[in-house]
Amino acid sequence: LAPSAESKPSHSFGNIIPHDPSTSHRANATLLMLARNSDLDGVISSVEQLEAKFNRKFNYPWVFLNDEPFSYEFKRRVKVLTNGDVSFGLIPHETWVQPPWIDEERARRGRNMLTQDGVIYGDSVSYRNMCRFNSGFFFRHELLTPYKWYWRVEPDVRFYCDLEYDPFVFMEDHDKIYGFTISMPEWESTIISLWSVVKEFILDHPEYVSPNNSMSFISDDAGDSYNMCHFWSNFEIADMDFWRGEAYTKFFNYLENTGGFYYERWGDAPVHSIAAALFTRKDQLHFFKDIGYKHAEFSHCPQGRQWREGHCSCNPNDSFDFAENSCLRHFMRLDDDWMFG
Ligand code: GDP
Ligand code: MN
Image (cartoon, rainbow, N blue to C red):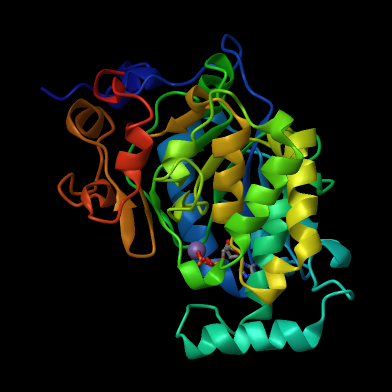
């Protein structure tokens, strides 16, 4: 006998307990996406999923950033997808383009070298702009300065599972700084000199290195060399006050002054990851193993109870966690109790 929808209070459908903003604690947080007007279809797909799986219950605002003005059509098609506030921002020119003090001749040689090596985006200046912006500037954009927490989202990603709790509040309540779902090694040729610059910075500023750091995530020889492991930054749930803080500000400026974002092709993923590993306590990094997520060809799929309770649509046997080159085991060795945590 099917109960009629009218006779049932709307909150008892399925086993979804709606979030009640009047009784629960909210975080000062926003969902964030950097995108081009031409990314619209992929933007809609990502927003639609995150709204359905999470934000319909929580109504966090969205911030969209672009180095060009968003079109009327883009805004119209995106705003309709959410009940949350949506803002569309233009990135200040000087935080996006290649700075004038960069030696273009040298930058061009760097691009040619990576192109010959067949490295993805090896030739792209705009990709370098994006990586530098995501490394050092997004959290200073005027649309983001009111917020502490962000969830970075990209066009064309997939969210596989229902999320019934607030990950921002989780981060806050557990004194976390940086959350990820997938970790993997970087293409070495894109960051040839990055680790030597990091080592110099540490020698100059040992005071910023946490006594309880995660060096063993990023180095297999106690810091002598970088093992290329990084958190895949197309997904991040993190605390912008960490990026705005003294340690990261000095770290970014140090990197910036070498020109490596343009002479090489430093990604925001290794830059963020190295900083998060060194300047926070290891217990401030969080693996969101309950968030099913896919970007490009790699996915993270929750297991067991979390897969069932999240109604996840991913195949639990198909998770990058099990891949030979996943860096998850480097992360897990930080804490032998991970399986039971
Ligand atoms: P990948 O994930 O490393 O392959 O790089 P993507 O092409 O997905 O770019 C990463 C993020 O930056 C995505 O959110 C893109 O929409 C965005 N992005 C990349 N290049 C540009 C650009 O030139 N302008 C703008 N506005 N966004 C960009
Ligand atoms: Mn991407």
